[in-house]
Image (cartoon, rainbow, N blue to C red; front, top):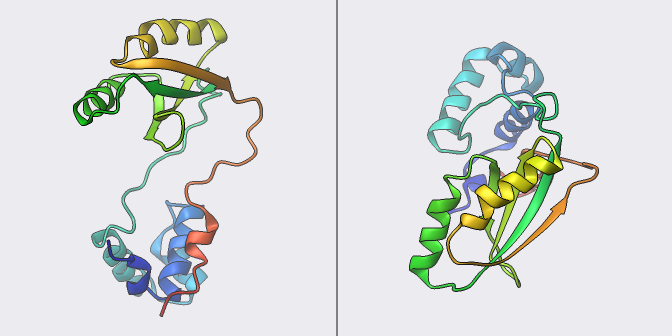
Length: 165
């Protein structure tokens, strides 16, 4: 896979950093930040979108204000890592409405999920109605997030790369 950072310059990185801070920034505002006209910013933004460096824009919702104050990190170990079983598990996970994130991971566990619930009783219900019904699960381990230190959309180091033209 080709490193897309090789195709962008420092001005593109500054545009990307500004959009990470505020994805709703108007081209005029972005232009003021990066010393370009709004037309030049619009052209560059379109190229970044077309090249897939910007994959979308969306609202960041506060799940606590929506009544979902508890997040659980769930580690799942499967009984088999056979390809067809992994695929079946992944398809089943997509049907879990309480899951906001799931990834296949290395180490002693196979998958990591983030589950958001209203209460511990709600987690118990999710555990019984969603997690325990996933196929090929051998073991489920849950840890509750106590205090969020940081939640970034992208690690700053990615946009601070010195490998740009």
